Length: 256
Image: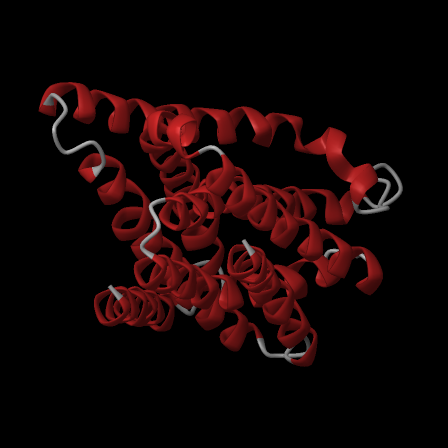
């Protein structure tokens, strides 16, 4: 149990570590920001497909192929639609940031995008945590640590890239850090839930993984890629995305 708790804190703490690094690289050029965001988009794209959607299909190998496909595709669709609905509710979430959209109308659109991005990170952290917890529940500790290590490595750049956009949108440093901390805490909770409820989570996990993958694909396509192509850095952004995808794929291959 001790190793599960320490791993949970490590996985969630990786997001916090990334957030702290994000404060160090806050004052950067637009070209650098676009490259980093695109790199993160590549990491998320690989994580969503290789780390969430493919495992969703591979779980319950003895099950009916058509049913597994339907569960995964349904999870992706519901995840994307859910994030789209959350996008419409984002204006009601500004209290979390401490910013009054009526007092700062120029920042409202930018803040909406940032909040949607942070929400997608938070949503996908839960099933990721559950996946780590379930792997410990299978009593294969070595494999569980590999999975947790891969998730933690992915969480560091995620933590980095949510800080600068929040601060540039007017969110205070303290609130930005607290929000990053909450996204990491969600993963800690997910890990513990997965460990203590293996039998339940093994049933819902394929859908939950696909759901998280759908939310990530939505925010990558709807927010991250368009944002990085607005400032004349399209070619750089494209290559940065490919590098991010390749780096995450290499980590997954080596650690897997």
